[in-house]
Structure formats: C-alpha cells, structure tokens
Image 1: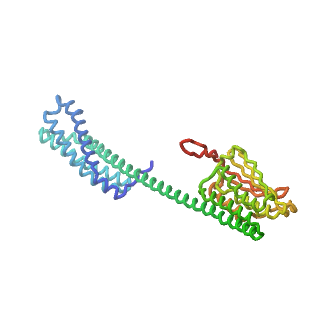
Image 2 (image 1 turned 60 degrees about the vertical axis):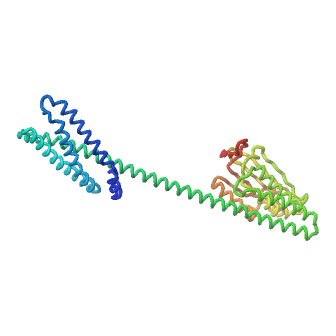
Image 3 (image 1 turned 180 degrees about the vertical axis):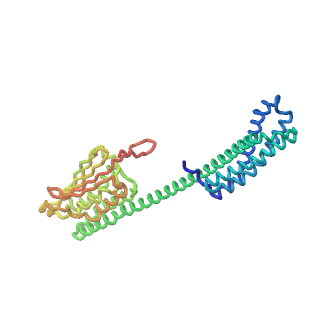
Length: 391
C-alpha cells in the first residue's frame, strides 16, 4: 500500500488553527461517556457498581479528556517523521497516557470505596484504558489525514483549474495568431492582384484602348468592393466564391475579349459548401497569366466542383500555352508563383493535415490544380445561422 502523503509544515500549522480538534474531543468523549453508562452503569449498578458510579464515570472521562490534550502536541511533533518512527512514538505515547489514566481511575475508585485489593485487576483496567486511547488516536489520525487529503485534493483542483485557464489562454493566443496569419495571407492577394490588373490597364491605355481601360477600372472597383466586404478569416459559400472569381474573370475579359472563355461544371449540392474566401481567384489569375496571356488564340479556364463522400473536390484547369502543347511530356509543371503558394499556406493554416492540393500537367496541354477539403456547409435557419461540419 502506498504511504499517505506527507503533510507540509504549513499544512499542519493551518490545521492547528481549525476547530476540528475540539469537535473531535467533544464527540469522542461524549461517545465514551454514553458507552460507559450503557455498558457498565445500567448493566452492573444493581449488583456490583455503587451509587456513585455516574459521578465516577464523569470524573474518569474528564481526566481522560485532559490527558488526551497531552497526546495532541506529541502526535503533531511526530507527524512529519518517517512512518515507522511515527508509529513507535504514537504507540509509546498511547501506552504511557493509558497507564497514567489507569492509575488515576484506580486511585479514585480506591479512594471512594476503600477497596485496596483492586490492584490485582490492574491488567484489566489498563486494557480498557488502552482500548479507549487507541480508539481516540485512530479518530484523531483519521480525521487529520482526511483533512490533509482534502487540502491536497483542493490543491490538485486549483492546479487543474490553473492549467485549464492557461490552456484557454494559449488556445486564444494561437487563434489570434492564426487569424493574423490568415489575414496577412489573404491581404497579400490584394496588392498582387491589383498590381497585375493595373499593369493590364496601363497596357490598354498605352495602346489607346480607352473604353476598354475605363470598363476595366469600373470592374476593378466592383471586385475590390466585393473583396473588402468579405472577412478574410470567415469562410464563404462556394456559390459566393465562384461569383467572386467570375467577377475577376470579367475584368480579364475586358482585356482578352473572346480570347478568354470560362466553363463551369458545378455540382448543385456543392454550392452551399464553405470554402476560404478568395480561394479560386489566385488560381484563376495564374491560369490567365501563364496560359491565356501567352496564347494568341487565347484559351479556356474550366472550374469543376464535386462532392466525394465527406470531402469537397475543386478543380481549376486551363487549356495551356503553345509551349505546353509543344512539350506535352514535360515532367515538372511550371511554377505558378505567389498565388499557389499563398493558397497552400492558407489551407495549411485553416485545415492542418485535413486537405490536399495537387498540381499536374494535362496530356492535352495546360495546367490542372485539384484541391480536396473537408465538406462543410451552412444550413439556412430562420432563427440563426449555424454551420454544419460533416467532415
């Protein structure tokens, strides 16, 4: 059996100031008085015990009460010693105090009765005294251990509550850091996209295509207004995200006209799926920059969405540039710059390991990017908006 936890000095000092000891004294000695009356006075009074027995019982218990006060400091001093030494000291103290109480009880009885032959029964009297003080000591140690264990339990609860508060603070700090990282990554897209678009407007102006440049500025302002109204941390429905990427592609159509074609293959049940805002725009921008802009005949950008079990599948591909068609067996896909790197970082921050993104070259030419995410959806509710996570 594991030993009881050893109390600290401060704990013992705190226990001294409590009133539990006096409650123990009152309860234990009242119990001894009642037991003595019931087992001796009422049972033997008519045969062996004289009429003074009630007063004698109260006197003996009063002496025992005072002697038990001497045991308390001895027990407290020995409390922090090793268990073997402590047990020896306790038993020795109990034996001595029991002997003293036995002598006092017998002297009082001899004084009241004049029966000097009583000393032959010393062993029986001592046994009864020893039993009483062993009972008292067991109560004292049991209550004291119980109180100390309760204090240790309270400390454990306090430590657990402290660690829980620290955990909450740490999670909050991580959430704040994650939110800041998402905002940084999300806002990184705005100057990147804006830089490319302004270059396109500048090119239109240089070639004296004022109407197209003016139309592109108007569409650019609409797109920026849309991007600013979206919280960079919150997710949006896939339907909204596709609307945003189509708004961007409308800006590019001002520049490329019929050279840029867009085809959508959106599964109906995926329209309510939640995705990070501005997820598809940087991928569409890469397709425009590395495929459509490099081809005199232009090309097609395809966006396809599917639900696969508890995952959302997003695909965006382009028809490629002339170089892609000339070298269909190229082993490594051409880098797509800031856009794909930004998307990877944002998905990693949001989903940890619960996502995948792959980039590959199609046999017919062009680049294909495929993203797999946990399928999350926002169910419409008249009272409130709830998010259903089915992954």
